[in-house]
Image (cartoon, rainbow, N blue to C red; front, side, top):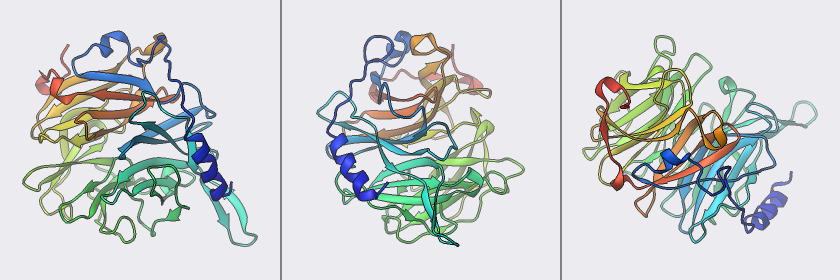
Length: 376
């Protein structure tokens, strides 16, 4: 599709509200006992029906007037028709607008016939710059082992987006979780590769994606494979990453702005090889959204910490069964703390929809997790 034509369609569709009535008969998208937990403010799906069959790997950002969520969607993960879609929720509205596709994986093979080829898209990541510009990073390629980084930009709160640009060779951008702006203004992006085992590295851009540098891999990909780091910050300048792994989350620390990192070690928290996200709250506490399990994604949890090492149980967002009596599947969360002080979370619901949950961190009732075990 011609990108200018696509952007015109976006501007039209973005004005079309979408009713969000869940299978429970109202807009609550959490089963009642989870909806009643202290701290839960709101829960609803971004959409009930869409033109795609499957969606995954959401991200969320706040603009002056809206919330924007992006995700990849199509017939199924890895299929060539999978593109990057967005949903927008105006702050003066209680519902999300109709999903719109903003990028696809169409490439032109210049050798020998300039033939058009479409590849699947993966893992969008949104970021708002101080100047109000919104960056949308994503990946394109047949599979994670050989995908490449892409970037589109919006200057009008997601109404239209620039034509896509390919990131430099060897740069993927933030691979799953949002980047963090360092005190000197540079963006620190947690990234990883899967072509020589699962290996984590960090990427840095001082000018919103124009130029880049990167660290070496923090692990060899064999002894303890890890990917998809999320970044936490501390008042003394120390940084922490938590990484997706098999069995338990892995963690590492930096004291020099992300240039060098301590050896990756086990966290006390379990992980069934599933994506995570964390956010440093305005009061200095760390909030993590993750699957508290070593075996599956049928429960999705929220934990809170003051030091990034000792965690307390806060919430369950999914737990074995979900809306409509279906088996739960909650995965690949994204979390931000907005200007209203609330934490806004999106995550994959059964690969069919994206769920949106808002929590008030000041109302959470925290419980101890002895030896990393979720309390009954």
